Image (cartoon, rainbow, N blue to C red; front, side, top):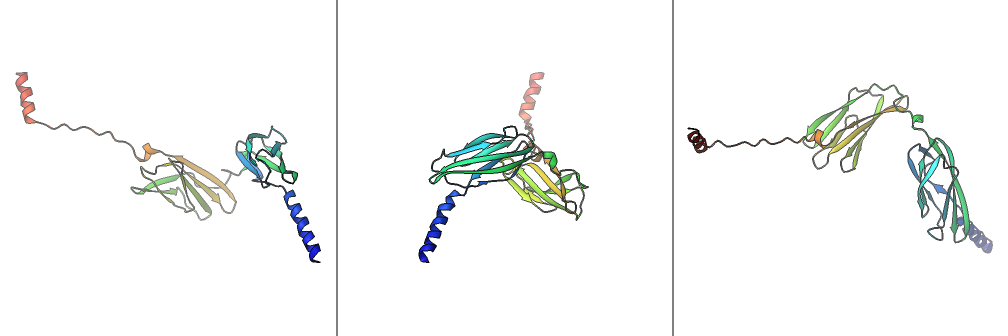
Length: 221
């Protein structure tokens, strides 16, 4: 009995390497890029062979070491095929990828009364943002993008974000979701250093010297 159990375990271990899978998202929007990966270890770096069913829908931007980056060109469905040379032989796996138009996303096709938001200075290093209308039927997702590329997020109705010459807010956007209709609208405003911290030219003030004035008067006589 023990011998049979060992044989079963050995057979299972031999079958495990035969599994192959392409990991990553199954949908991508036209114009966006997506990266897919192999979960299978190859016997060499160049032992991955990627193939796309149609270059009409997807273009290969880069591939190597079990990864591939694709750019979506046209709405539709494409098949990605991968052949991997392993220590136990060749394995093959595939994945279907759905390419969607951006218009397929429900954006700004929604009963949302909020059309703008305002910014208010809390103190010298903090800004607050609030919608022009308030309602309990909405949820909010705020994002502030800074000059150095960093971001901060908030799900508060009226968020506060740090803002100073050392951390300047470039863009603020809010995604407003109608919770009952499950649709949303996005509002974005762009700022910058000159908006938050305008540079004021200093006017040079000259001191009045009585002696100099008298010398000018004597010269003019």
